[in-house]
Length: 262
Image 1 (tube, rainbow, N blue to C red):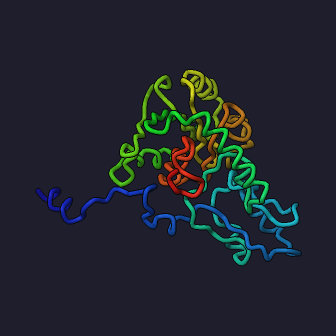
Image 2 (tube, helix red, strand yellow):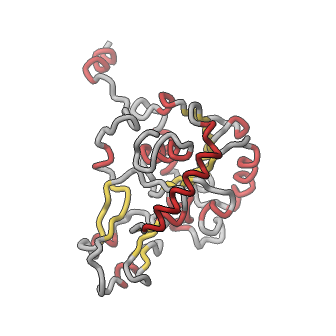
Image 3 (cartoon, rainbow, N blue to C red):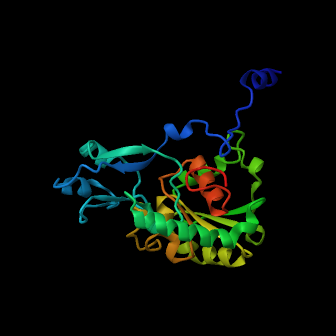
């Protein structure tokens, strides 16, 4: 009886995303923003403070590779007038190079071409999506966020998204972890067993680039992208459940690049 009364008093808590925003994006520090007022500044000490070497100061303007960034905030603590957190959970990209901020005009043109090609390949998956998840050497943080997708708040089943244990029934492969050598063969075999059309999503900094472990002899070099073809990259260490959900919908073309249903 107490649970019934609590349910009546709380009402429906399930998110309406992506049909309607619930304000979550305003609180999630999911990206790094760089102020354009940085010409002539010596930012070498900021670049050296980055544990994954995500900051590039060799260009005219500094850049941050979100595929390497673990959002530790060191750059913001040292130079808060140039670097700041960007409230954005819709940070998944269809191309690895597009994770470098700030973006350019060429990036936007390239994105349109990549999105069109992916849509033509996976357009038949829009109504019902089965997902196979493979942990390829994760620290476990991404797994917590993925498992949250099935709880009453996110409830991905309402969108026709389910998880499957068999790669032969899967449409999308979610990969977490930096690609430990003991899982490389299993990851490749899982991908080969999936029917066409299919899409692959690299979830988290480790899967995208190797993160803190990218120079380790026990993991794949530069994440899982060199092991199997990746279609969507979700930065973050870890990304939020909403960020992962956005990537899934982006992979099958049911959502635009800024969170609006197609």
